[in-house]
Image (cartoon, rainbow, N blue to C red; front, side, top):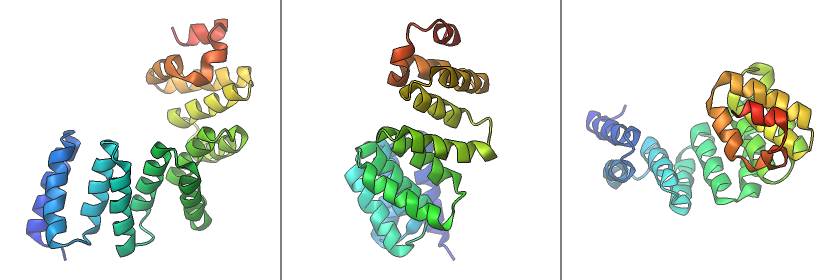
Length: 199
């Protein structure tokens, strides 16, 4: 059973985190870790805050410490994937994705990270396969539709890319903005249909 004082400190750290006060949140997580260095939630949340601050090495240290306590914790593993991906350490990120998916083949959060890692590695066809698996369960997931569209654009499958982009934009206006900024669509910048979609 968790100590009520620990829960109160953790709640305050989480409140600060949600307000974007990441450094202040870390102070509260550290208060717990000073007393209990193996407190799983504090290690994970501190790692996540550090990752948001782009301090990936220290974030990974927190995740590794958390995984010593609970080696199969999916939340910690996913956060570790994200830090590796943001560092450009795609091989390690992909390895963790594959390990999770061995036991949980339909775990869409791991599939989502895997499709993004594969895209970053230039494995566009494989990334599309991951997108397809997610879209089988969530056919209107705007983020995955957008990512699949980017893959097709990189594969010069322009009509399919634009069909998917149109579907993504129908899920939310933010995908117009993302498309304008995305390097994936640079080759389509003069395409009349693309221009119309991002107006």
